[in-house]
Image 1 (cartoon, rainbow, N blue to C red):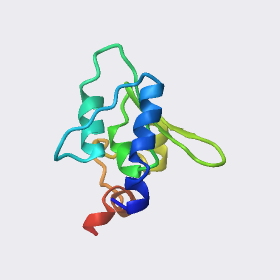
Image 2 (tube, helix red, strand yellow):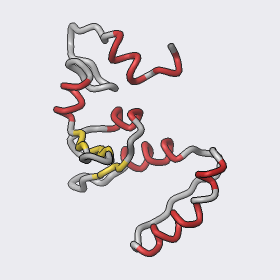
Image 3 (cartoon, rainbow, N blue to C red):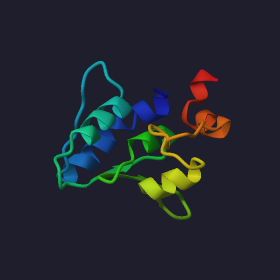
Image 4 (cartoon, one colour):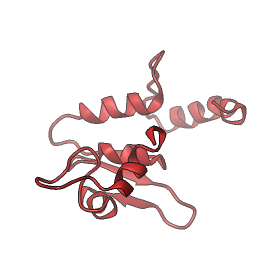
Length: 114
């Protein structure tokens, strides 16, 4: 974690507590792992919103999970339809029958492996 971000953690925690929102930390796990686990366990009938500019979170988008990507011009709200459109015809963690994943989609989702 960059030092400038580490120094902001107490302020971030204070803001979260002032909003009376839960602050979840799990020792030994990164935030994206915790976010993915929580979003997968949202009770039926409850919609989950993830606010993140990390494109890896797009693989979590379902009918019950929406990713809001903050931007200095306008926030982008990723629904299954938008993720499907932007990823060239399929959701990151699912592909339509009889389709081959595109190189662009794989490079967007899994850049660390290329």
